[in-house]
Structures are given as structure tokens and as C-alpha cells.
Length: 355
Image (cartoon, rainbow, N blue to C red; front, side, top):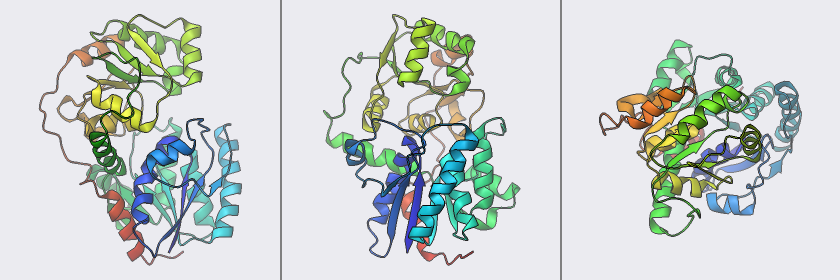
């Protein structure tokens, strides 16, 4: 069996790494990794793939940035060329990016079945491009692997339950794998200049970074927190922060970090403040309280017992959430048992779906 895995952003490589390692255990399965180049990241060097313990992609389509329409169109053209060359049995896509929808559309139009990992998530905000990508990909796919049990309920509401499999979350697999690695290598992947006690923050969504009022409100809250805020920033966002004069005494801005460095920071921090989807889950898996500076979350399962709180960019709500405590340290196990990759690969091998 041949699988083409299509990925375009750094978080997707981290998700895919769990499945790639599992595929490596099966002599009768071949995987072709395709990087669309949706997000160009200088940190995605040989070291990045060595850290993930996966091979470099066979194809880098180097699509780059652009409007949603232009970017997705370029991907469709180039992915189609790869699929015609490789003739896979399955195309595997992850999450909700333009690479996801482009991979799904290119495959299904060539009558190649698509499997969607992290399927049937909904924020119910159709203004988010990611929401449209999720919905369209799910309805174009032949197999849907859900990360949470609640996603199965959403699948049923949309008439997709017959092709839905609860795999659990590949990110949970990933956290367990790398947490064990760091446990056995405690001095590795530490970041220099980090205070003994700190909050970990990330900001990257245009909803925040392109809105001066939201940014001012967020950074004003950061300045009032009990411990320093460690903030890895992409150069584009760092430029915005500098132009707005938002640097403060309680904020420690550092360059973007590697995946294992981020897991190390997560392990060492007091709490997390973010507008990222993935980091909300990772904080939950690492048992760190999370404050989500967005208007909604697709990861509603993390909201139990105050593990995650939605504050938008509201200064007072951010401060109140950081000052609140976990109501019950027992977590709801909605994300599987850490064997999502195994379930995905075995299901694909047993499936006889053709288009």
C-alpha cells in the first residue's frame, strides 16, 4: 500500500511525524511525504526532521504565501502532478490549512480516496478560513479520523458517521513520545535566558496581530501578571510589536523555538496564554492551565474544570483567568489512549475503499 501524506505547515509535520513513525513499522506500507511549502519556516532544516525522527519530504512544492485562492490553486496544480506520478492508494491530510483542502480536492478529483486526520472539528465560525477547510475536507474524504469523542457526535449530525473512526489525537501520541524523550534527556533543548518562574505565551493569529486594539489589550494584561511572560515571536509579529511600542519590562521576547524546546518550555512554565489551536491541546496534555485569547475554540474538550478559559483579547478577562485556579485536577479523557497513529495505519491497511 502506498500513502501520500500532504502537509504544509510546521504543526502538521509534528502531527504527521507520529503516523510516519508508525508506518515505518510496516514493511507493506510506503509513505511519500509532500510539503506544499504553504508556510516557509527557516527552522525546518535537517535538524527539524532529525528532531522529529522522520525523513525529509520527497517533494517540496514551494508554493509559498499568497491569497487563499491563489495559494490553494497553485497547490492543486502541483499536488495533482505528484499524485499522477505516484499513483497512491490513499492520500492522507491533516487539520484545516489550505494544504489540507488542496490535497483533498486534488485527490478526490483523481478518484483517490482521502483520509482526514483531526476530522469533524468545528468552531462554528464560518468567517474563519480554517472552518471552511475543515467542512469541505470532511465531506470530500472517504475516511475521517476524529481526535475527540465529541467530534463523532458532529460527524453524525452531518451524516458522516459511516466513514468516521475515533482514533484519538495524534498530538497526544506526540506529547507522550517527546515527553519521554525529554525525561531521558533532561538537559537537552533548554532555552537560554528563561526566568525560573514564568508564563508561556504565543500570539500569531491575524485576528490579534492585525488588530492594534486587541494587541494593546493583550500586552497590557501581560505587563500586570505575577510572573514574566516568555513570548516566542515570529519576525513578522515581532516587527508589529516593535512598531506599536508594546515591549514591556514583564515580557521576555525570544526567537521562534523548536518543537522540543516548546515542549520543554511547556513543562517548565506556570501557565499558558495563547491564540494557537495546537498549544491549547498541548497545554492540556502537559497539565498546564491555558488562557486562550480568542473568541472561540474548536477544542471545547479542554474547557473542563478550568483547564482552558476563553478570554478573547479582553484585558480584564485575561487577568481574571490567569488568577483563577483549576477547579478539579481530574482531566476528561476525550483524546484517546496515545495510540492514534497505530489505529490510523491499521484502519487504512484494512480498508478496501476505492473511488
